[in-house]
Image (tube, rainbow, N blue to C red; front, side, top):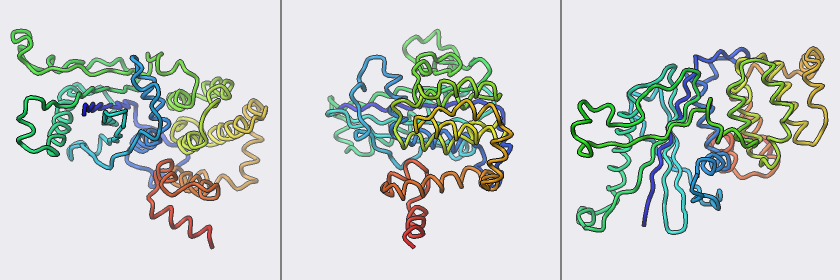
Length: 340
């Protein structure tokens, strides 16, 4: 069996987000921590990213059924406030591939990235060989899986950290190939045309996370239908849940307008632009409908509402947990509530 471990490191380098409408006591210590891990916990969205990075077409025919989430973490205790991770196992013919996604939450470029990647890759290898007898490891035919590290960068400043491990080794020029080395793949969203050029739900989510002004949102909404074309219902639910966090620079009325534009677009309506032409009317409607209080409840309440809608539509508990990030115990409680 030939295995590939692919650590994908998401370096979400932004300034500390300003959440205008949510109760901070209900949010995680870093909103990107929850948001990005939540987004890519959705198999179909992660699969879109994987195929977008696949230059040689090895994952062209890969399906969600071949993806399996692994409940394991390699994050070191010292970095628990700065990182979170996500693991996938992929069954591809007779090959097994493990994807290790590291979400990085710092406010500046981390020049220790090559070293930290080395630590995580080493831990992956150590964990890998635990499943083999010592005699098996000593055999000539024993090989280690490939490890391909990728750094996903969403910051405003130019990335200046070393790309190769050997650049962090003193005097590496004198030793040639005798020193350990690898080069990680850098994905800079500010220059990643190959990631964002396709108009789909993945590009929409990533672009929403970069919006800081209402005018930017309005331009994106004009093309909303193209981005949502072909999107799965569970992907759209992820988008709705993440919208308040993605648009944290905007007011709650503008966020609600975006939600309604998405709903209208999904239904095939033609009322997208009027939503943005009269925000005062939208605000009056929100107050009338009693949604103002719901907005204040923030991210957690959005996840609960999504879970309740999915329960009514007949989704399984595991599917609801995957999309909303809620625990199975909490979902069972909500299901009992609706039965009563």
